[in-house]
Amino acid sequence: MNPGNEISLQGYLRQDGRKGIRNVVLVVYLVECAHHVARQIVNRLDHPDVQLIGFSGCFPNDHALKLMKRLCTHPNVAGSLIVSLGCEGFNRTALSSEIEASGRPVKSLVIQENGGTRTTIDDGVAWAQATRRATADSGRVPMTIDELVVATICGGSDGTSGISANPAVGRCFDKLIRHKATCIFEETGELIGCEHIMAERAITPQLGEALQASVDKAARYYDTLGYGSYAPGNADGGLSTIEEKSMGAYMKSGDSPISGIINPGDIPPPGGGLYLMDVVPDGEVRFGFPNISDNAEIVEMMASGAHITLFTTGRGSVVGSAISPVIKICANTETYQRLSEDMDINAGRIVQGEASLDELGEEIFQRVIAVAQGQQSKSESLGHQEFILTYKHFEPLGPSCLPLR
Image (cartoon, rainbow, N blue to C red; front, top):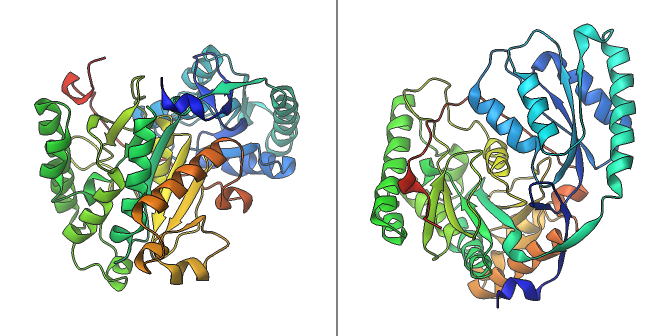
């Protein structure tokens, strides 16, 4: 018997068979020129289930279109209002068609054709409000842990992250995977030096080679940029090198076998398992830094279906996310006490000898279940809904990167 069936969840059933733990109506701007209008629609409604996402660029990008399609058809999303200026390069017709095909309500407003700012805001408010009300009573159905997708990221790391919060998340991941859930870790630029260890955990030799290649690509990319994934705050927090930071970041993945590699927006196959997300673009450096903030990586994991993100921090971070809840695991008690209203779990108890890694891993697991059942995370309760999407380019992954089912 699947042990995940022993814990009862309730989810919003979508047409593709996936289930969401939230029921959000999105307002989606397709260029920075439409950002203000879209934000005013969300502000006027002032409801936690109406949220803002968007893409600022004017010229088209296949990666941005792919991710926006995945986000607007995310299991946590009930419907989308698209707000376009009208002359940007984003393929709004393709986005709208994808949402409509998923069985969700969708409407496009083109500011240049809709009378300008005020009329577009008024029309957008009316549609989003009606859609929220119509979808609010969507029937919930039984859901089990093996239907969950949980991601992890670290931000504001310090010398305690790798010995408390990160390995505790790894223990949580191991338990989720035993329940047949899907777990995603990433930050290949912060796994430099760990590629051989990861390769040993791959379910096939070919996947092991692909894991090493993904980290090698990240090292080359950052070398070209002349800047690695190592910030002054990491040094101030006691981390000495990128290798030391990498070992801490690696601990979030736990000890389970690695089932495959995915790119942002790739949906892992059914059956659960542990996946590395390769976030570093393919080809020559074209668009600058792979991710200009932690939230960009959260968005990419959400685009691959993550219902929840586990965010570890030592120095402290207050960000959350639109669409999917973020759970904060703080690596030391000093930071936890200073930022207690933003932190969900104090992993600093490990450093102080007050709790074991297994105990904290279980606490994080239970918090994942509680949030999946509807309890708000700290960032949700504070209204954090950060979002950022940037230009990138990826080639399709080969068959060695995914498990045979």
